[in-house]
Amino acid sequence: MRVYFKTILMLIKMQLEYRKAFIISVIGSFLITFLLTISVYFLFEEFNQIGDWTFYEVAFLFGMVFLNFSISEMFLRGLDHFENIIKNGEFDRILIRPQNLLMQATCTEFDLSKIGRIIQCLAVIVIALANIDIEWNIYKVFVFLLMNFGCFIIFFGIFILKAAFCFWTVDGLEFMNILAEGGKKVAQYPIDIYAKWFRIFFTFIVPFGLVNYYPVLFLFGKADNWYYGLFPIFTILFLIPCICVWKIGVKHYESTGS
Amino acid sequence: MKKYLSFFKLRLNIALQYRAAAIGGMFTQFFWAIMQILIYQAFYRVVTSENISLEQLISYIWLKQAFYSIISAGTDVEIRDMIEKGNISYELCKPTNIYWMWYFKTLANKIAGGFLKSIPILIVAPLLPAGLYLNAPAGILEFILFLISLFLGIALMAGIMNIFYISLFYTMSGKGTASIFYAIVEFFGGTFVPIALMPSFWQSLCYMLPFSLAADLPFRIYSGSISLNSSCFFIVMQIVWLLIITISGTLITNKRLKKVVIQGG
Image 1 (cartoon, rainbow over the protein chains, first blue to last red):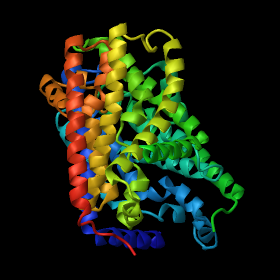
Image 2 (cartoon, helix red, strand yellow):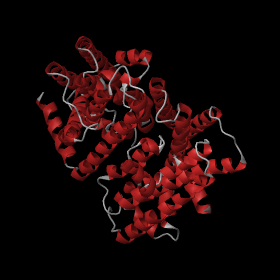
Image 3 (tube, helix red, strand yellow):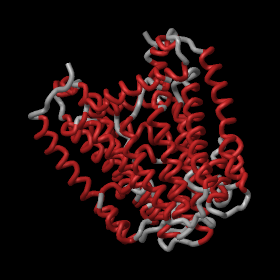
Image 4 (cartoon, helix red, strand yellow):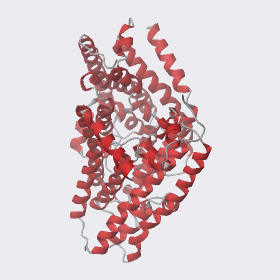
């Protein structure tokens, strides 16, 4: 863990060296999420509601999903761009170091510019929560934190899977974006608005439903079942197959590059 | 003209080589389109938009997805690198106009990658079950106007991309500038939310800018959610913008290239 933070710190310093480029990147990442938020607002101006969900409820989900996706992008950039490590043969260097492989792959990159997006998502969440009637208590705060944790875990799993995929091919990675980018977009809306086959896939295979639907029902008082709030814990099960695929991939690895 | 055509051919061949990526991309496209349709179906269940019906919107989504890589703001990493790392010096040695060389490079990249990607959707999407399928064009006249505006839209988008590359001479931050550029083009081009579903003030604002004329207008014409009169008017607007962008683009390039600083060593 100490090694991890030290590497991250170096990467942060590196990015701050190019100040102008860094500021432009922050503005860029801020702008995209900002305009996406406006887009959601536009849709609710036109339609008022989706299913029985209002603007602020969807805005909350949007904020939570984008927040955790941005955090994943910031910390897990190395996994996201893992094909570069494979292509230039740098993974050989990683293999000979006496540290956890996954950890090393993760901290090859750190994208500080996502901070613009993170701040904006936090603002969206705060504004949304301020406009929704919730009877807060300690358990609900805990559920809220657990939802964010679960959401992060899902993206973590997807990023590991995407990286592990690179051991077999560095082409066709766009397919994996269905899970990352697609999951992000799907999870913006509560999954009960989708068709049934779609809902099943995103509850039992990629468990977004466990963080953006059941606990939300409880949090917003749409359902009384208190145990719904604990569902995000089960996202950890999603990590198991992902890490297995990664481990198989490492065994399968043949060096490339020079 | 011959040398520009050979740039075009070379790029086309390179783009066609990545077949695995193309198949992966195909799945992604279908997924995106169906997901968006599911979301809008949920919206339309309660209220219907006055500007565009659900059927028109579904056609719009399919077509936009089919031609997405042609009319979106994906930037050419190669040209970006050239400016950031100094290889621009080789480019400047060539006895061609750099604006037009880049213009045809961009155009070829977009068309080669793009039309290939559009074929699976154009074949499969009309065959899907009710509520999901791509409708036939609203009429023959609409279809002809759609083809004209799509062609102009592609030419326009390549010009917009060129302006972006030139702006890199000023900012020198390819990644950051690209994401700002991407955000603006996609938002005003109707990718985040179709222009027809925006509040009316924003709609009129968007149709004054070139982004929506390139990336939104053709598909609205196809689906018939815009009258023939205004279609013709907006096609004229496309031509006007194409002229404005091309002329200002060449002028700025020539001016800027006189004092270009080569990066790297």
